[in-house]
Amino acid sequence: MSYAQTEMKVIQWAQSRKIIPNASSQVQILKAVSEMGELADELIKGNRDNIKMEFGDVVVALVILAAIEDFDLCQCFDMAYQKIKDRKGTMMPNGVFVKD
Image (cartoon, rainbow, N blue to C red; front, top):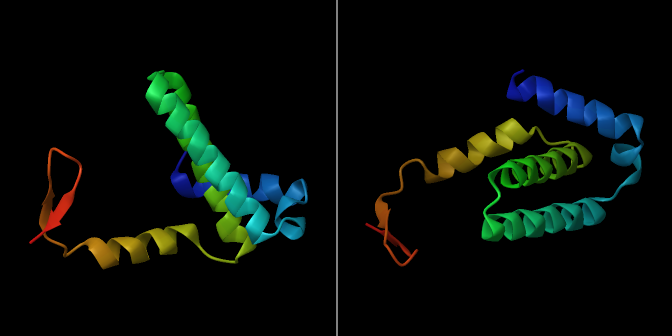
C-alpha cells in the first residue's frame, strides 16, 4: 500500500470516529508530542518492532493534525524539503550540524 493510500485511510478512520471534526489542533499537537515521547522511549530501549510502531503512531498523529488544519501533509513535507535541499554542511560526530 502506498503512503497516499494509507494517509487517506487514516483520515477516513479519524473522520469516522469524529476526531477530525471534533478535535482541536491544540489537542492533536499534544497527542503528536506524546507519541514522540513514546518513540523516544522505544529508541532508548532499542526494540526495533516497537520503534517501527511508534514511528507509525507519530505519522498518524501528524496526518490527523494536518487534516484538522486542512493541509496536505505531502505538500508540507515537500515544502520542508524545498527549504533544506540546497543547504550545505556536515553532521559532526558530536551531533552538531555545521553549515558550510
